[in-house]
Image (cartoon, rainbow, N blue to C red):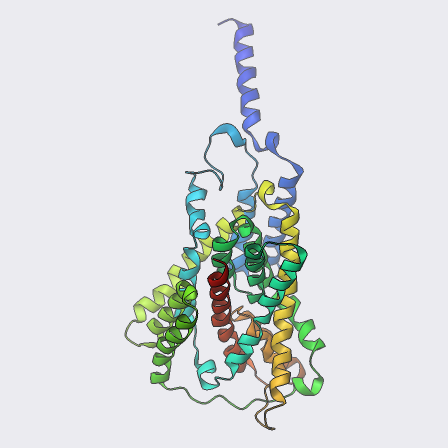
Length: 388
């Protein structure tokens, strides 16, 4: 080979190499999404905003927005059939991960606060107005019914439920809905307190609730069995989520399956959370994510979250009209009706302590909080039953 031929060969190889690099294939949309991923990581690491959620999602956004030559047949993108990311993403797209997350939630959740005060179920149910309110708004804006349902479920503040329902009804919006749901879940400490202050008076914030009664072991065992039968006979389409939630709780409360409960609540949930968060983040490829529909999803998700929080607080105020003095509920626990467990319950506790350092609301708030988990799954089942 002559010198000129050799240098030409090297130049051609370098040119080909350049065409395969991210620099040659990058667009400004990629850099926008990379910036979003970095913001997620900053909020998680520096501000401690739900790092278990935002770090996997934020890093997943970086992974999903590394530019590459789309027609090179490299099989590396999350939307390329046969790629590793695509295979892992099937757990999101086919709805495998959410029921497993619900199994872990059930295995780590104590429903005693709800069992001891069953009327708190109504508070959790009231917060689901955020879902149906956002559904109506989405229809009015122009979204198709299936898309509107997938977006509206963000109001339940339950990422796995949002993923499960949108994978069935609106898979084209799955990435945007999932990121929106987890983003607002992480922003609970920012979004909810102003709404809670707006709809309550100082006198209401000082209400002391009666201590919860002691719940027996038998009640704890019967709750997941009765809960499963009641909810799934009414909404069979919610069985994948509700069945796993109550199954996990029975593993915890039975007293003879501690190893299984610990595995479901610990290592299994951790693994699924990592895979779920990373693949959801990676699904936000710029070409698929930066659309007008995505902006609509985030706007409607925010509306749903506000409606849900306000509905829970206002329902407690309304319910108090029918309760005797001494039995009234503190409206600050109404925000916990959204199913961001246990984040929203902590907000109830923190805001209550802000006005009375001796008024502990956490255990009371856990009642509507866990009711919200059940409520959002039931709401998803209702929407899936009508639209699926």
